[in-house]
Length: 193
Image (cartoon, rainbow, N blue to C red; front, side, top):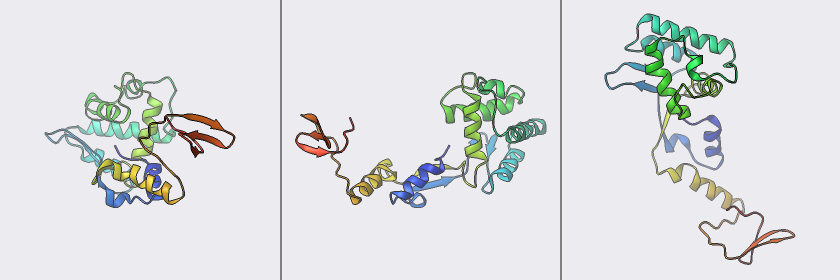
């Protein structure tokens, strides 16, 4: 559902510009017929409330139940017992909210169905994505090939700062030396296989 702040900070630290390289879209979990949730731009908590209140396909009881549950999670610091599943955490939510929001979000964020997924991890994702800053839940789509987002800028940064890197080098001989390693007679500090 988006990149965490640390990933964007890492991109910036190696000279990659996320604004230029990524297209930012608000979180949308809508079905083709339009029902579901879409978060509007803005501060996280008001955007979440506005998005839930505007959600299509849910009755007022569904919307209020989700807001009450999210408020409870927020008040409890997004914490729950370590052995809880997402299904247990969300068992009191209306079926429409579980079906249209929780299950798709759980599979998208954790790659696990809610009956098996950790509620603690799910709450951490919700906290980080939905409640930690403007745009934190945005979907970031690459405008360039994936290598241009981080690998190529990171490689260029490392070389600019004195690193010598050999990619796709078939090592014929590897030996330990007092100062590091030798790969085919080439002195190196570290070897990554």
